[in-house]
Image (cartoon, rainbow, N blue to C red; front, side):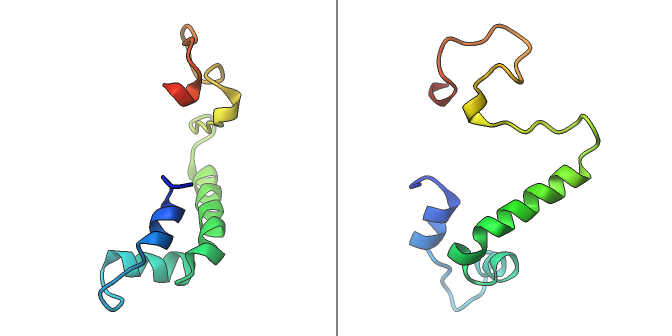
Length: 83
């Protein structure tokens, strides 16, 4: 989890007395508590995108499914995580 927004946010909290973009995001997206509210914010965002996207125009990719579901050509020999 070192390369995720969760790691960055918890290891680099907003500074500067609560001003700046970082502080605004913290306040309005997850009520100044990313660990408690960040996952729910992520889920709400995904639900909104699913609702707004026209039918048949949204690709949701799950890395566990591999390459096959969305490639229209020969499937690479390497695993998705190695590409």
